[in-house]
Every structure is written in C-alpha cells, then in structure tokens.
Length: 235
Ligand code: ADP
Ligand code: MG
Image (cartoon, rainbow, N blue to C red; front, top):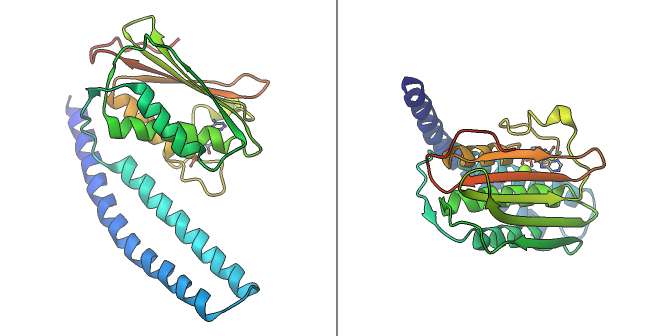
C-alpha cells in the first residue's frame, strides 16, 4: 500500500510537471506556426524555401502530438467509470482513426450479449483510438481492421479485439511495446500503448497480443464487469 501511495504521488507530480511543460511548449509552437504562415505569404511559389517551411510545420506538428500524448500519459488518473455501451466508444474511435483512409476496410463483429462494463468514457475512448490508429498505421497500403466485442467467459466481463492485416509484431518486440517512448515509427511518440496499458490497469483489465508468423496482429482486451475481478492473465 505504501508503494501505491508513492506511485500515486509520483504520477501526480509528473502530471503537474507535464501540464506546465506542455503550456510552455505550446506557446512557442503557436508562434512558429504563425511565423511559417506569414512566411508563406512573403515567399511566393515553390522551391527550397517552401520545402524548409514544410519541414518546420511538420516538426512543429510532431512536437504538438508529443505534448498531447505526454499530457494523456501523465494526467493523474481518477477514472469515473459508468456502464456505457462499448459499441458507441468503439465506433467513435474507429471513425476517427479511419477517416481519410479509404483503403482501410472496417469489419464489425459486435455481439449483442456484451455486458455493460463500467468504463471511464474519456480514457477508454482514447485507448480504443490508440489501438485503432496503430492498426491503421500498420496498413499504409490498406487492409482490414476487424473490431469484435463479445462476452468474456472466464469471469463476467467483455472481450474486445482489434485485428489488423498489417505485417505483425516480431515476438522479441512484444514485451517492450507497452513501455513509454518505445516506437518503431519515424514520427511516433511511443506513448499510445503505454496509455492503453495505464487505462486497462485503472479498470482492472488485461491486454494480450496475438501476432501469428504469417502476419497480422490482434490486440485482445478483457474488461471485467466488477472491480473485484480475479487478477489472472487473459488466456
Ligand atoms: P507509436 O504508435 O507512437 O509508435 P505506440 O505505443 O502506439 O507508439 O506503439 C508502439 C509500437 O508498437 C509501434 O511503434 C509499433 O512498432 C508497434 N505496434 C503497435 N501496434 C501495432 C500493430 N497493430 N501492428 C504492428 N506494430 C504495432
Ligand atoms: Mg500509436
């Protein structure tokens, strides 16, 4: 219990620090965006100057994303769980992740008997979004994202799966994916799955990866109906 208190205080301090840093970073970023927009008006046409302005904007956008993810990751978690329909959260997250991605085909397999597990709406929507975004990003040339939700049978709860037809995840990476800042993407922050993990911890849930040698990845989530679900692994 003592350890939990220390952990909680550590995260609260990290949350406060992140909020301050985020604010201090956002202001200069805003100035950079404005300066580039003004430059574009002064320097007409195309050419090297425009390539450089593009780089400025791209990198400033990346810092913006980092700040967003960092805030999400470090925000002190006091989840407010309510029994809301998971289908709605899943649909919202998948719609956001796949908008402007005509080559990603979405397949739904939502069973009517999914129990109404209590979740913090904001946290869980973000977790679903992170998983859907990863799936979309794993399929740059298109593919199928399959979302399934059904009743979990080992104890009362819901089983949710995100399956993509991307290249899959090599076994040696699977342990490290959930660590903050681990990324294999040129413009990734490596915080998406760390946020997913924290959200599941806050809901006494579990996550497991299946990635068969032939390619494709499934992230499997179990969300318990009650807070006192057994602390067993999914499987
Ligand atoms: P980011 O997306 O910013 O890289 P994440 O924490 O969301 O950070 O993911 C960490 C890493 O896990 C990714 O860089 C990628 O290597 C791997 N990964 C996550 N989801 C998938 C997926 N569906 N298919 C293949 N690799 C994945
Ligand atoms: Mg991600």
